[in-house]
Image (cartoon, rainbow, N blue to C red; front, side):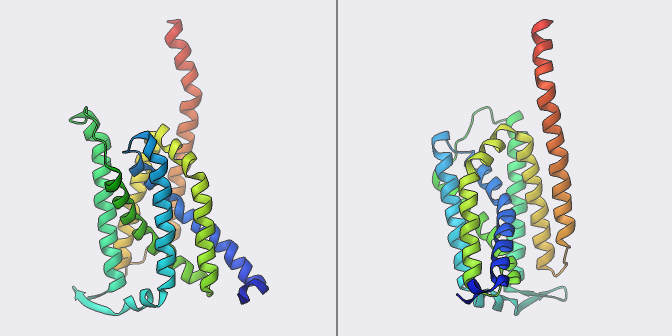
Length: 245
């Protein structure tokens, strides 16, 4: 607990907690998308279980950080490119995200237009398994960020616990917002594609600066917020015209 007596320790805790919250927003959105397949009375429970699993997984990875750091040893080579255990996890995780997001986009677009007139409700267990897989993938990014920012394991664990606490409080609000606005759901799924490509590139040692990814996401969110505001203002006008014609 030496970090509690130093200003650097508290600064690291505050900064890392904010970063963990930012990194966790995507996780909340995707958990909300998956939980949206459940009956309404099970959605809140699924979100809370999903975020609790995320906290347990992140703390578990932090406590086994020595093992995680050893995954950089090359296992095999592909076209002259050494692939380590960490690289393999990133590549497989990226492929999973791309496959999952593509399936969800197809289900939301083609499904509703064609054969999805009969709504298929997912089972609670199946949704939790999918959330668990997403938690594992997003936790890798979170753990790598924590290791790069702080030296004390207690600071890392405390930051994760505080960040998940904030996300648990705000998960219902974010989930309700995503349910009300299908375009936000599609935007989140496109982010999932982008993150998947980024993970695969990282796995092959092709580093994409995070600033480019965050700028693309931030700009997309900014444009979507403008669209939502414009639609909100035009809705009363359209309602008035409909009943005055």
